[in-house]
Amino acid sequence: MTEALADQAAGLRRLLAPRVVRTLAVTGAASAAGHSAVAANLALALTARDLKVLLVDARGGPYGSARMLDAEPAQDLLEVMLDGSAGGAACVQRGDTLRVVRAQRTLAAAARLSEGQARRLADALADLSAAADAVIVDAAPLAVAPLAVADHVVLVTGDDAEAVTATYRFLKRMAAGFGPRRVCVVMNDVRSPARAQKIFGNLAATAARFLNLPLECMGQIPDDERQQQAMSQRRPLIELVPASPAAAALRRCAEALLALPARPGAPAPAFAGRLLEALRAAA
Image (cartoon, one colour):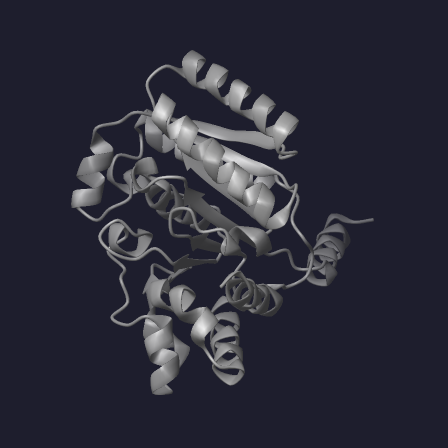
């Protein structure tokens, strides 16, 4: 086979291959875990790999991922849906491949919506995510419903005793809410890698034994005082200080995410529907 024919064959295989879309829910057991910063940085790290990303900020407020990216839509998706406006009004385009949606009120009010309103909301979210290669939900702390329907769960925690205790309590809620499934853990603000590795090992062994929840360490992010500077400037760390050890660790977390198995096809409409159903069922 000539080189030209080989290139054509490879292109045809890519064209016919099933599209892969990753859905990811990022949360923490405490507000101070820093999971929204991790979500924002993961989103940008994935766009740097030429992936189209939809980031759903379901946390909102000053510590939500949309605010950290300086890409906060003027309206929540719920407000747009109730007004009858297009879903794009709750969306901000950041660069060529990242879209950010505000959905804090959306997820909080899902259980109170009528069937018709819930269906329109799911359709709006599905439309927004239809072209995405990855959908990241920046979930509120301790939120369980988004975790139950995403392909992958990322739980961000610190390496101190209080954070680990809160994380285990949350893992118990997760196990009761949707049974055994793999949970990716990111250790944040790590001062001693060896200590953090030991803490994760103990946490993983306890979760496997008593909760039947397999934990996988997705990465360690070293403590970096410039993270606060990044938050105050509304810039993610991997943009503000791309050469920092913490930024490098965040990029490695994104690479670890891409190495996880993904479901073929384009599940954006199905994911949006499952998310709204889970929120309504949890009420």
